[in-house]
Length: 415
Image (cartoon, rainbow, N blue to C red; front, side, top):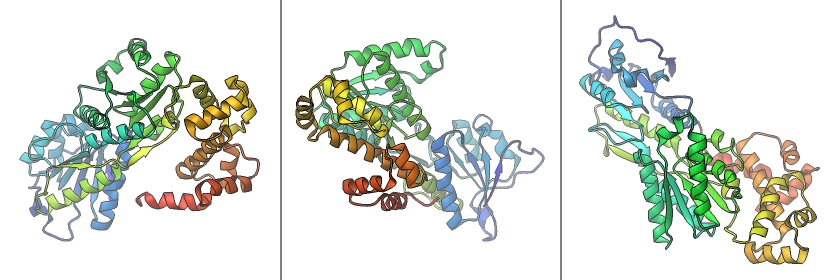
C-alpha cells in the first residue's frame, strides 16, 4: 500500500477510461482517491477499516484528499487516472462526474442516498434504540431527546429513540436545535440559556439523549448553567463516541459507539467489487452501532432523592482520591444509619460498596483506554499499593486487571 496526500492535481495528463477494464491486468495497482476530513476521529477509524481490507486484498495506491477539494470541484478527477473513489464528502456534482467518467464511487456520507451510488452509513435508527434502552435500563422513566432537525441522520436517531421509548411505555420530551446556530457568535449565550430553560422544565430525574456528542456537550453545559447535577438529576448520553469530546467535558460523557472500522472495511470491499465489474446486493447498507460506552454522565440509576444524588455526586468526584464513608456523611449532612438505609433502598448497596464500584469502573476505563502500567493505574485510582488494587479488582470482576485488559483488546479489530 502506498499513500499520497492530494494537494494539487496535474492538468496535462490525458484521462483514460477508468472502469472495470482498467483492472484487467492482475499486476495493476489501482489508484484510489479518498475524500475525507482526517481531523475527525471517526474518519480516521474509517480509514483504518479501509486499510485493513487493502492489506488482505490489495495492493492499492491511496491518494488522500483531506481538504475535500474534490467535493467542491470534481474537475480534479480529470487530472489523473482513478480506478475508484471513497468519499465521506459526496456532493451531487462529485457523484455526477464519477458516473460520467465511469469511476466507481462508494459514498460514506450520512446524508440522503444519491441515485445508483452505493452508500455505507450507520444504522441511525438502531443508534436511537440503543440510547433509549441504555437510559431505560438505568431506571429512567422521564426521557428526553435533543436533536437537529435539518439533518436526516439526526432525525433517524430521534425516531429510533422515540420508537424504543414508546414501546417501553414512556413519553419523550423533544427539543430541536439547528446546527447552523452553533456558528453564531451569540450561540453560547442564547442557545445555552434556551437549553437550560428546557432542562429546568423537565421532570427529574431525567435521561437525555443528544443526537451527537457535540450536542451532548451543550446539554451538560446547560445543566450546569441551570444548577442541576449531572448525572444525578440529568443523565446525558451522546452518540459517535468521539473520545476527545467525551473526555473534554465534566462529567465524562457516555456515548453510543459506531462501528466506523467496519464501515471502512465494507466501503473498501464494495469498491473492490465495483472495480471488478460486480454489482452490490444493496445500495444502502446500514452498519449497526457497537455499544454504549458508559462514562460518568449516565453511570448511575435514576434516583429521586436529592440527598442521595448529592452523596453520589460527591463519591463520583472523590472516590479515586481515597474518599471515606465519613466524608460522604459530612457532605450529605446525614447520619450513617439514614444514609445506609437510603443507599440500600435506592441502590441496593452500601455507600462503601458504591465507592468501590466507582473505583473499579475507573480501573476498567484506564485498562481499556490507556496502556498505563498497573502501578500508574493504582496511583490514579487512589490505591497506595498495586497489590491491593489487583485483589479488589479480581474480587469485583472475577478476573485480574491483566486478564481484563487482554479480553478487552481482543474485542477490538486488529488495525
